[in-house]
Image (cartoon, rainbow, N blue to C red; front, side, top):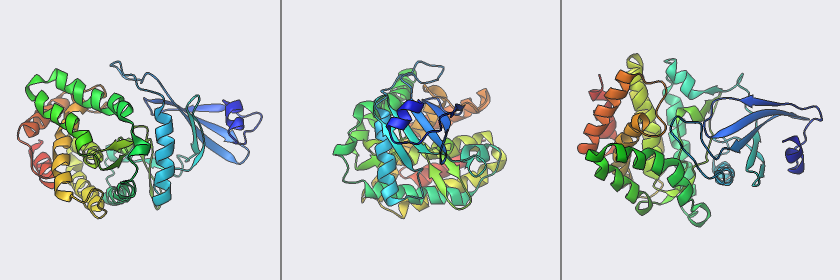
Length: 321
């Protein structure tokens, strides 16, 4: 690893040791000391660390590097700096963000520390990035990659286990390309958001592809909705976060049709919520009773979908016990 980084122009101390970091299921991640400080090194895994078998192309490292660089051109405050990238063997070198200065937003939320401003900032920044990438179709034709990382494990796998609502899930799957209008990040979630003193950073763009921007809206909001089941005392604040994220995003149009995008996001929301209990990557913090609650409400909303995202959020937060 040290030799590889040196070949890529990263100055590594001769005595440097690689310290493995935890938290990811899709990559090996290390902190490595360099002559000017630590760097973060990330290598995609061909088989993800999940209970259910899940494989994905390691070429996703190239997609992530490309997205981080392109996003930084528009919102440099949103992403970590890319220091180097070696396509073979798929190693990405990023600036190291010290946990003493940066906190994972998922950890804060699970501790009941809900800050609406973080959601608003994230939504605004993502809208800016979506809007900036409307002409990048050919550079992000990652259909196979996105299918392996998102559509198959979340939508198709879940549809196979819920035949009664398979048609609704398959419609979303089929419509992802039809509604494509910009580059989606594909993994906007609190676990990939770091909160600092005056900014938020979005990590892990392995899923980046040309697609439906409504996916990024629905995918992120599922985490706030699921945590509202897990943390009833924080439900009101989580609801405010959800609406702030949408309001922040809507301030920066991506596809020129907010109403259509909102309608699609309202369908992605319950679909991905169901996938987070019955798909290949279930949320680990939900209890069995909480999973049952999420499942029942998500199936209900898929059967009778709301016409816009704000209504879908209101329905969810008003319906869960």
